[in-house]
Length: 271
Image (cartoon, rainbow, N blue to C red):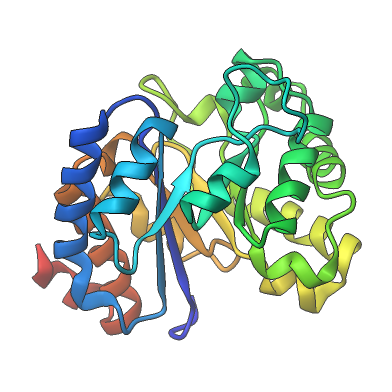
């Protein structure tokens, strides 16, 4: 792991918090990470639509990126119950998530639908966390590499090189997320990240591919965060339930940052 490596941390609160809880969460997290502002760190929190305006209006987010968990892939007005990219732009959100496995598996979203969301967001200069990952069945069939490449190539079709600075790839093996998610070895995660990096190089060239953050998510906790972030191709961590408590998220962030900055032995002193 390079000492000057920029680190990315993201959590998706799903439906775990209402409006008041989301505001309180942001206020607590901002207080806890306020001293990290001068470091090479990006922290993003993806909230449900209902909480976005309240959190934005609270003006408590400072350096933490405020993100939406989804966005409509169309601009037509006839999408009942959807939220357009223009609405998110008006809310001044910093980022949006596209292609989460919940949407792919439970809502049957296709790569083409996800592609439209990525394009709309980047057109509005909103950062996109593009989620990709293989299912347990696909892993058992030995087609993980093919699945990841197809998802990347289809979802990024049409994204210009000028917009790559807005892109974050969030790799989440479907079988490793959720309450019953399996723990993924750092070696498996690194291999998958290498596949992703190589595919991005095919699309945009090696130099541009190296500039795109690839973030690992899937049963990340305080114990496996360090071994994961030490992998060469892993630029950050997507943390689920272990980050839904502000203090828990803060502890993981600090453990990783100070491992990079001072070394593993010093990291133990922040406990």
